[in-house]
Image (cartoon, rainbow, N blue to C red; front, side, top):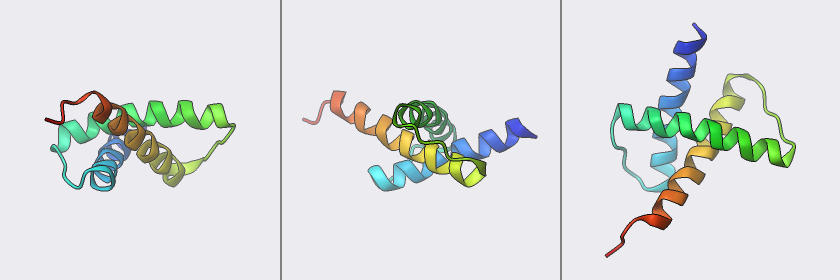
Length: 81
């Protein structure tokens, strides 16, 4: 059950980050990958800051913020021409 919840949170976090950061999504699988990476990035950043948010909503917020940071980093390396 925890894995299913993690997958759902990953998909939602990736979708939300894509909507906030760029305004369009890449699909379910890419949103899931972005959300999972976002969860790792968000957990790392929040840990550095000493912040700990618990629960499903806290995990979604942490993952979404991490995914936005991840998408921002990717945008720095993309060719904008």
